[in-house]
Length: 105
Image 1 (cartoon, one colour):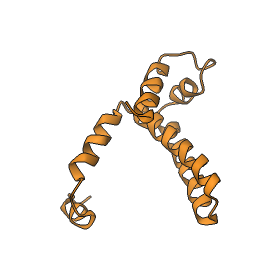
Image 2 (tube, rainbow, N blue to C red):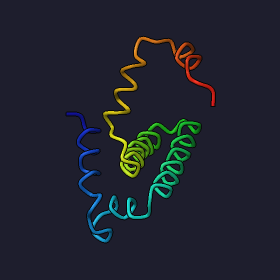
Image 3 (spheres, helix red, strand yellow):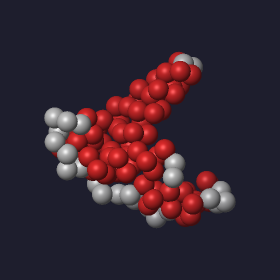
Image 4 (cartoon, one colour):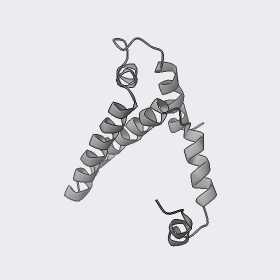
């Protein structure tokens, strides 16, 4: 198991928790749209740190991005394994070829 698997499992256990007892439960209680919005905010913060060349800031914000991505997935009942399976499916395929094979829209 990786740290991402462990974190995804912890997030799953927070789905039914009291929002006053857990930040994750509080996010999930606000709904999938709010979880997606929070992921977007964290992604922008990571981008800012990358542009500034702030390695430590990027590491910290990168951790926030991964956490909030997993919360967003959980809010829409998408398993981390589904995302990892998609990455595995793409492995060994040129990014240009993979993008060209996607359906329009």
